[in-house]
Image (tube, rainbow, N blue to C red; front, side, top):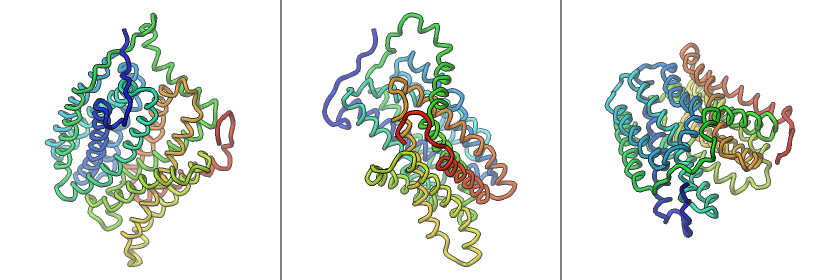
Length: 419
C-alpha cells in the first residue's frame, strides 16, 4: 500500500513537518555553499594552482552529471525519510573529515567527492518529500519557498558567511561550522514522517534498469523538438559555465585586484546580493517582458560585466585608479543580470514543458546543464595557469556574449511556446 500525502492547511512554515524540511534544505544549502567557498580558498592557498581548483569543482559536478537519473530511480524505491537520514549522516561525517584534513589536497578532493555522491541522493529525496507533507493547494507555494531559499543560500553561504568566517578564522574553522549545520539537518531528518515507497504497477521492476535511459531519451526529445525548451536551456548552460569559471578563478581574480585570495568577499558578496536583488527586481518589474528577451538581455549584460570585472584590475591599478569600489558595483550588477537570466530561463522551461513529465525532464536537464558547464571549468584552471585568470574569464565571457547574440538574432522560435 502506497504512502498517503498528509493534507494540511494554514501557513506552511508553521507546519512542523514542512518547517523541518525547509530547515534541512536551508541549513544544508547554506552549509554547502560555505564549504565550497572555504575549500576553494584552501586549495588555491595551498597549491597556488588554478588547475587544482578546477579539480575541486569537478568533484562537485561529475557525480551530478553521471548519477542524477539513477539516484532518482533509487529514491523512488526507498522510504524517502531514510533516503534523507542516511546520506545526511554520511555527509556530516565526511565533512568532519574535511575539517581535520588540513592542507592535504588529495584527501580533500576524495572526501569532497564522497560528499558530492551523498548530495546526488539527497536532492531527489528532498524534492520527493515535499508532496508527501504538503497538500496539493499549497504545493506551488512550497516550491516557491524552496526556490527562493535555493537562490538566497548562495548569497548567505558563498557570498557572506563563508567569506566572512574565512577572513576571521580561516577555511578549516568554516568547515567545522558546516559540520554543525549538517549535524543539525541530520537531527531534523529524524523527525520527518515516514514516507515508504509508493506502490508500483506490475512489471515496473523489470523496467527499472531501462528507466534512466528512457528518461534521458525523453529529456533529449523535449529539447530537440521545441526551441522554446532548448533556448532557455542554452541560456542556463551559458550562465552556469561563466559562473563556474568565475568560481574556479575567483582567488586568482582577487590576486589580480591586489587582494589576498581569502578576501575574495569583496567580489562574491556584492555578486550574491545582486543575485537576490535581481530575483526580486524581475518579479517586481519583469511582468511585461518576454522570458526569451529577459534571458538574452540578462546574458548579454552578465557577459559584458564579466569582461569589465576581468579587465578593471590590470587597467585600474596601472592607472592608479581605486579599483575595489568599481568592482563592487560591477559585481552587484553582474549578479542581478545572472539572476535575470536564470530565473527567466527556468520559468520558460516550466511554461513550455509537458506538465506530466516536468519532474523527470527537469532532473535530466540538471544533468545536461552541469555537463555543459563542465568543459569550460575543466579547461579554465590549467589555461589560467598558462596565461592568466582574468584573461580566461574574459575569453569565457566573450563566448557567452556570442551565445546570447546567436540566441537573439539567429535562434528564432520553432515549436509551441511563449516567446
